[in-house]
Length: 68
Image (tube, rainbow, N blue to C red; front, top):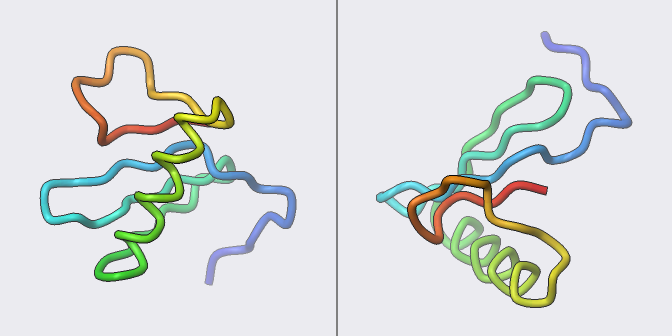
């Protein structure tokens, strides 16, 4: 079982072609969300980017990679 870092933050979110959200944390954990939860997360992240609270990963080729 992996020890969870209570201070870990989201390092990167990538939305893949199958509309899954691949989430990487600063402590090295990775999780994958799919379905309605991933779709809702994508909408929230896109809104955060528009408002300047998140940014796209440098060199990303499209709207699928978001880094904090």
